[in-house]
Length: 138
Image (cartoon, rainbow, N blue to C red; front, side, top):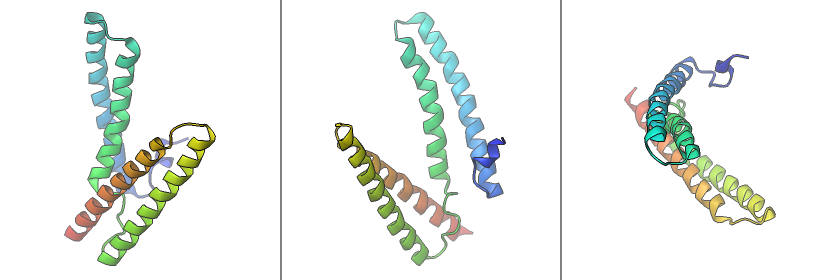
């Protein structure tokens, strides 16, 4: 199995995403050494020190991908932009609704579902507007 099968089919997006993964891995390595030093010199729980580099790795990749403006490479006109914006709103609402139903079934708070839906919408909106702006410059 090739890792590139998990990435986008577009070669440019594959290269950029691979770069984000490598950057994040290097930062994670540095951060891991810092966490080891903290573990040896403080009383912070090891689980927290282990979680920080992993969370940083994941969050860094997602944020770099969103901010880069490479997700919506086919959006050039204002009509396409508005159509994608409506689609993103619908997808976020659908996701939040399904997640809320699942949370109700397991007797948990549905606030998490709505927060996740709002975060998804914010991330999609930022990515779409950055992509649209970048495509307008081309």
